[in-house]
Length: 255
Image (cartoon, rainbow, N blue to C red):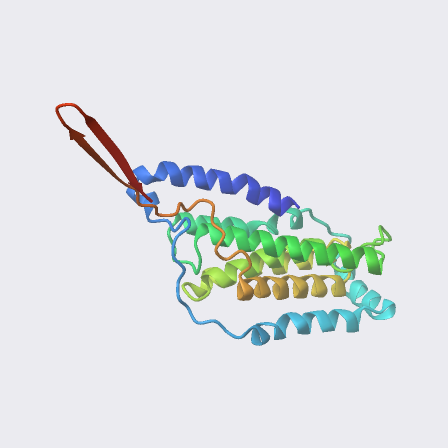
């Protein structure tokens, strides 16, 4: 939900800049809602191997004895260290994407399509994650609430990094890969902060990547773009006939 609020706050600003930017050569070069780069794509089943593997591993490891042993081994040398950094770095890939758009780094889709696919991926992923949380009711490792499995922070972060990857990897692989630094760190910190088990993080990342790749494959609402006006041609013809005792005129409009 925080991500959708971030999008809702950012998009109108970008649109307002784009409208004002028509007067500015630099901003005109930004692909606000224009063409799509014709780049080759891997089949969906190939892109599903990694997230399905993460998800399978999550269910295999989601046994009390096993995940408790992993948690102890991770937390023991940290001596109770905790941080709130994971609450913020999960959004960095989104900021990266819009920053590189403003810098006019070529991306697969326009700013509008990026935002649209990001929002759809976030909504679908959040729906699946919250459904599983409320259905499976796994308790958090800190003996907190029973909504640990899967991790919401991790799923959000991996949606953001996967969108960044899908948009930029084929035009600039380092930009495309950079988002995983922050999503991976988000998942790791959820465990280090003792807010989630390792399987929670694995399933959250698996769902996020799988959903985002499916959205980019099927492209829902592909042609929906309220910001792009349809080209319309209007012609008008006026004819008059003036005589000694009469006057006539008619107007013809063609759309």
